Image 1 (cartoon, rainbow, N blue to C red):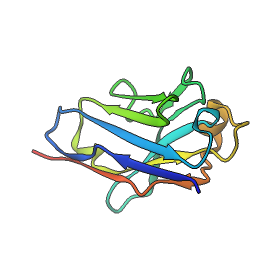
Image 2: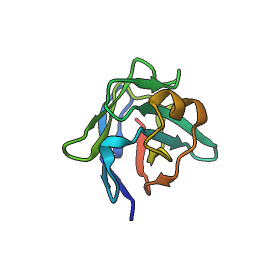
Image 3: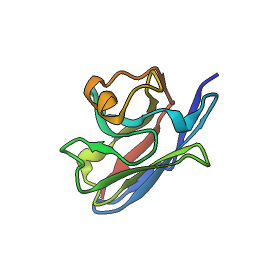
Image 4: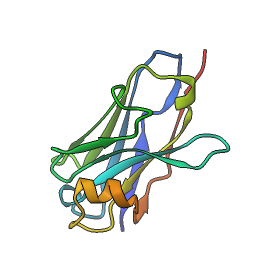
Length: 128
């Protein structure tokens, strides 16, 4: 059974930083592109970032480019998202997602934005 468990969210002041983690199990993590998706209160889902299976290619939404960094440790089956220079508009539930197939490149996953597994999310609240 595929499991994705996010952690690391919390309350932070504007300009602060957080590091989110996603522990993956139930599939061969190193073979799949992964992503972070967020949903702000009352809004739809926004794809924040994608990383390919090897970790060498990354993609970002314009809203977070230069502030967020996605990474992965395939030996630990863990996906990360470093959030810096946080803004009030970054307040959202952040979800870790898995691509549908090991054949998906990072570019494919960013283009299609179709996930076949989601975690339960971790809440990030940016407030003064």
